[in-house]
Image (cartoon, rainbow, N blue to C red; front, side, top):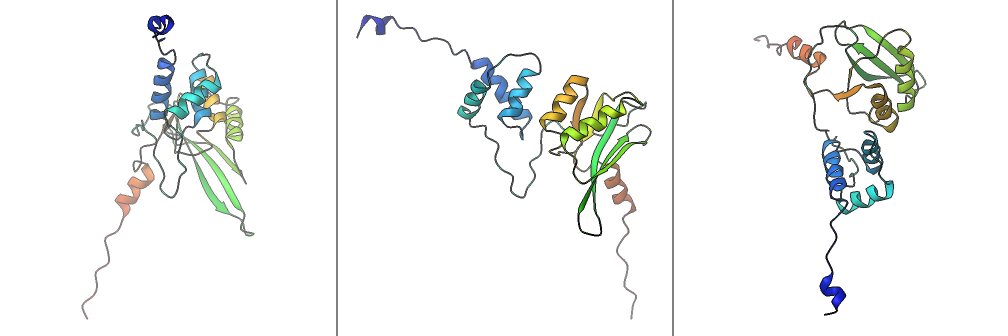
Length: 200
């Protein structure tokens, strides 16, 4: 054995902490790819190279699988609790319709959870994440932004534009708990029993 090989001391892994943070973010945001993981790492002010994050992401085999038919749910869902004052919690979702020529209309609905007021209704052919941030910024001229916005798992809401917008303005994005919407509760209550057959 050579003297240099005998005296060699392996260096400590300098990427251990970064690897653990990538693993934690990937576990929390299961539909985030390496680009969104890198964005989440930089939001608290951490300076990290994109190629290093990409290499560690691939070594850990965290590539997001393509969806087939079943929707993959994201962790950390919150129960629905009605706020006590206006402009604290908003709920946001989309409603779809079609015109006579068969083209799709996409309607953005923003509701105040405390007052049940329709804060905004935006109707367009397509609504991207960037357009969604512009609608929310437009609302700041007439009212204050909420601390929490509840949404479903939509690509417009959890894209880079919306995630960066929420972080810069101190707004927390939360997913609704499946099966706990008020409309679904009312459907269960109003559901009628099956009609009885009259004797012949």
